[in-house]
Image (cartoon, rainbow, N blue to C red):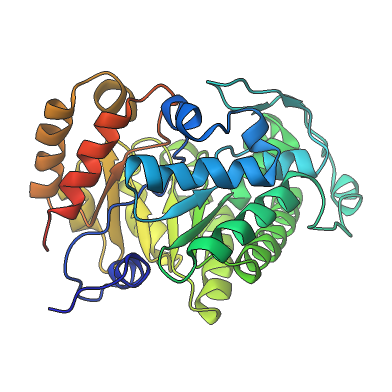
Length: 339
């Protein structure tokens, strides 16, 4: 079989085509303190400065060995863009959303007419451009964004979960708004050089809201994003936190190319629940990747490989204190695996 560039290999793997071996990537956040120390770009500045964001993303490749570069590291830029209050992050911890801006349908209309060149959205796109200019011919350039359901929750606050049960019109209106934004944002990332799109939608869980509401408030909106990306020939990976076992078929029905599962999901069961979607994951980022040795990482990942995982990766975002040696062990396992 022919050998492929990392860019070709990942694109083929995500779309079900034959490849020479498994790509070595992380579809979830990649930044760690050891990488920051190696490249000189530290959080929280690397969340707000395009040059530093690109430098830290590049370290995932040059220091760890991932065969892709991926930005951003946080899932708060979108909420901040719309005026939500953000608790600042630190060198070891990501920023978080602590204030919300929408209570009514009328509030939604006040958020329209946005300019994607502004704020951290613009920073992320500039970082993608920097990375694409340097690596775009060889490496996959992954753009990532919070999904429309979780963005709606960030914008509306904890009232969101009650709103979808008690005020369908408001809930659907906010989902339309966030989805239209997601599509516009994804297209801008692609214009700037991204060739793979990752949707991180942590609270859009059928286990959390039930299959009926997932089918109404999530599937059609993920499908709109996937349809837009398919027109541009950009594969889509979807990550939702928690035990998504019972929701995998619904997740796949939106048209995603791959589904990233966390450590609460049994890999073999996940593979059996989907028809075509590539299953990505799912080593525990805390109890294994952070707190164990490279030998244990290899042992645990071998079990994941034996269970039939499509792409070897962490089960969620990499913890900032994760040792580089453990991540390199994961990269080594992936590179040595032939399907």
